[in-house]
Image (cartoon, rainbow, N blue to C red; front, side, top):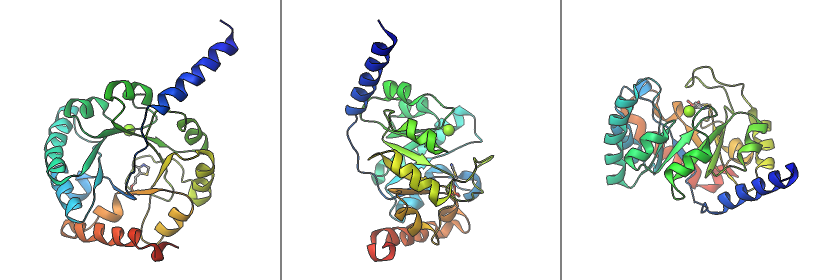
Length: 236
Ligand code: TZP
Ligand code: MG
């Protein structure tokens, strides 16, 4: 088979895989857990985030062994299921599969999204982190449900973050990825949320703005962000 025909068939195969993934309506607010920042278990964080109205949460754990992360995720999923919260597991497609969580969030060095899709099936939610316009452009052809781009602004929640892409970078990504759901991450707060959405983000993912400070205030912080996001006048 010629090189050209082979590449052409590969492109068609990729498009067909993308077509089997049903478009999902994802919420505008995407909280991410952080056990060190809050001093709370992931299950407890899910409960507080859900008290404030969150319905879609990512479980992110960078310090535990896989077995401990599995146990934490298992407990968190019980709470999530009881409260109708969709739970996405960061990094670990194996843990998402074993627990039948709602999906997985993959980074550039994790399992390739195509492989995670084969493991988890068409109905799983698969998200993919990107840090540059080029990475986002390539990700638009992958069998994922959303692309995350960031850091958009300076962040203190990630070790060794990539360079910030700013609102201009976010706008360029929006222009490159067609209708793919785009989640902005990194340093999102009340003062920049409006500009972030106007630059083309469909949703905002946050750690610090929701979880730093008194854990008793987590639910109120979520509720305040949801209020801002639901009240279009705040955003236009
Ligand atoms: N990826 C890019 S920035 C970031 C991740 C996980 C951290 C986001 O946290 P914060 O506190 O909302 O900046
Ligand atoms: Mg990762």
